Image (cartoon, rainbow, N blue to C red):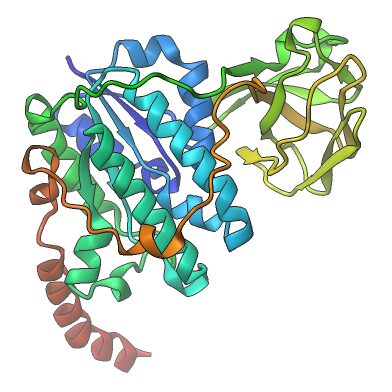
Length: 359
């Protein structure tokens, strides 16, 4: 049995979508996706599930929609640029078959320039490293299908990604390994830190949380937690929570100042701090304000390494003509979505008046 790992956002998190399509063909699926999360969450899952990834026959990655949604301004794009570069390099050094999805960007509520920059950056890095690609964004643009993202304003239909999942399962042997290129991994050293590795833990505060997609042991953050000395001088990049109730707030205190984040999500959620100056010291603490936060862990990074502070030529990045080599391009696995739209539109044009007449 083949093992496929999904790293992604909500487009991968729906129960009857790509996961079901892969399972229909006898694939063992490990879904590490979370809704509302960008590339940094994929990097976090990559680090805390390294053994699972070592046994994968194929890793399917996507994050482009929330790489826009979570960093939806030109100022924040610099953070997104940094994280996307980090993730692709870490994926490359796994030396596994990587398949990258680029989903249509819901442009109604996204910054248009950010949308173009994120899409271009992903495609540039996919091409650089020799990852396999299914570019649904390109397909939707060419076929004028953007009004067909109608599950809601951000997600397509399950039956489309389910069919693609079945086709992926039938083609696992045909996907290529990354290119052989002479590079070193100059990323910072990343650490997925579980709450159990922190100081001042009260064992009575651990609870289990389960959804159809995942299970986590959370810590109800009722007391201040501190860091062991081995984690001092690392930067806190992101925080993983599974909140219990609304009106909760997590606070990180250190020698420089405080970081606060309100949490109204009642499910597993990972967020970027956006602040690359939260360095862990002996005085750094994590605590809840108002209601206790369900705390899972953190993504840390060493101060050494490439933080991608280079100047970015926005115009050149957007205009760069990137041609994906044929052996990496799997757009032929995309079903005839424009036909599906025509069928649905014709059905609705006939049935809607009938349904309305009865009312």
